[in-house]
Image 1 (spheres, rainbow, N blue to C red):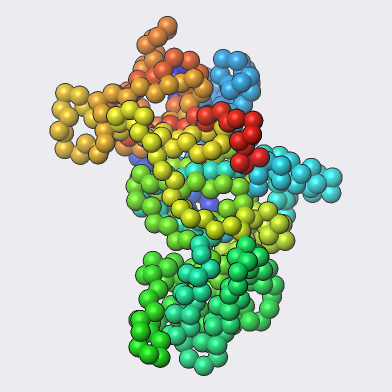
Image 2 (cartoon, one colour):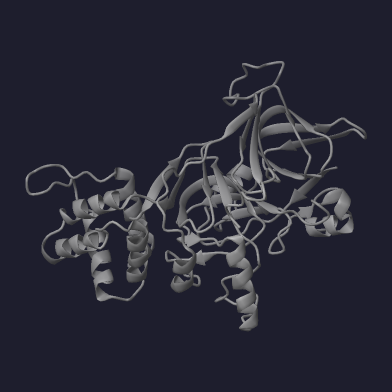
Length: 431
């Protein structure tokens, strides 16, 4: 069945005041609107729109007939979100499945309330996630080489004088050595240790990024990536004195153009900084934070599960199964994300047609789908058996039960989340 769903955007402090409303074609509320949840997660399930006389959540719909509406006789293993990032999110990691099961059970045994602020594990599930940029998106994602991090620290130290310069050189020295994973873990421990040198380093860093061009005593330029400097300035402005600013130097700065993606596996340290994107994840809300936040921070637990290996390529590639369709299929069975772009078959050269579009796109619906239209108007049809047709404009969302393929036509863009490809028994990188 083709079922319209809806939800109310969540008003977190890091949300944009206008970007999500603009994308969804709804009036701005004046409050920060951070993310729209489109799925059956108990924390904020979508509701059925139009077809139900009484308000009904997607969870209740699936529970009413799991074989017809659900996945494998149960709830959805994925959650689709639309994010509008107006300010940096916390530095964070997500657990793998084994860590989540153990952590959830341990906090239950310790009597930590499920809704307690200090709770780390709200459910026994992993939370890998993938984000595709709709507008330009900036993020910190995964550890870069220590050589690059030391280079930037020394370049910034060259902009300071006296004690401030010495402090930043000392911070760079903490990253010198051959055992990179151990050095990263030690740096995380030190950054949140309360050592007075951390505060001194943060003050020196804030001063350094306000300076001009960088060169050493020989006059040789020690250039720092302007995007890195911009990120440090933004973090210093929004989270002055937060140790997470120091930690950010260890991470890649990634600027995604629309249509580019990042995949965040278990243990990968990251933070979204700005922009609008569509995100899909395993159906979990487990987050361990390491600064840049007023929420609960548990450095000891984060350091226990963080993956300190270097990440070579922060971006995640798409494939193009058919014209007009792109697919991001990370190595997890919980989800994949598709994007269809369509143009009017009768006027293929219409002004404003999106690049890479096609007049019609067929999407398999072997498993349930959740879709959201992010531009234009799209017609969704399922013609096998009982014919079903729906027309959705920008900002509208549908739940599509498993069955025959659906066909998309119209002029616009639509993102679709569904279950991922099955993994072999010996190929479960996130378990």
